[in-house]
Amino acid sequence: MSAEDARHRAESSEARAAAVSGIQELMRRKEEIEAQIKANYDVLESQKGIGMNEPLVDCEGYPRADVDLYQVRTARHNIICLQNDHKAVMKQVEEALHQLHARDKEKQARDVAEALEEARSRSLGSNSPALPQAFAKVNSISPGSPASIAGLQVDDEIVEFGSVNTQNFQSLQNVGSVVQHSEGKPLNVTVIRRGEKQQLRLTPMRWAGKGLLGCNIIPLQR
Image 1 (cartoon, one colour):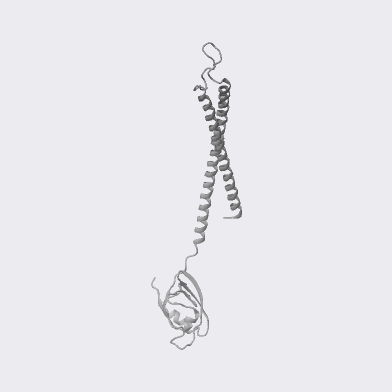
Image 2: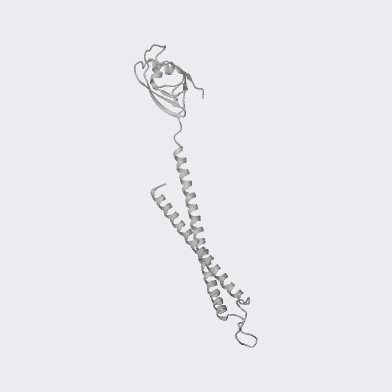
């Protein structure tokens, strides 16, 4: 992830945190308004259970004497104002949630795109050139021999031995001929070892053991 992507991600996280905090504040405001509405309805209930629409005059048109008209009128007014406030807050909550969901959806789409890009990059990176085909394999090495000193190991698969390679290899006589004509001269040897290509320098020479290499090589059947 680049520095620009990291900065954008950090800004997005901060913006989301601010949006969530704003929604939480709106929800607290909503709960406060609902509590105040209930408190005013309790006032009406305490006045003979009078509600929002019952008349405040008796059958003869005189103000009712059995209720506190001031309290009732004040509670009714407060409830109307608070219900309007509640409606406005709920609209703000709805808009904020919509924006938050849109932001989350955008972030999700961006994350998916980044993941796909990363996977594609990894796939391209892993598509390294195929290993060359080997024509022979080392099946034994004598300790202290020129082959051992050069770093050759049992099970190394040979793809190049001096001038011999997969394209011109016909038999082990090709390798033997190169060895006989290269006594005391370093040869470039390329092998595949545990799935990786290795470059070695092997110098055929006389030593305490048999031959000029001190290893046994067998052809691979492909």
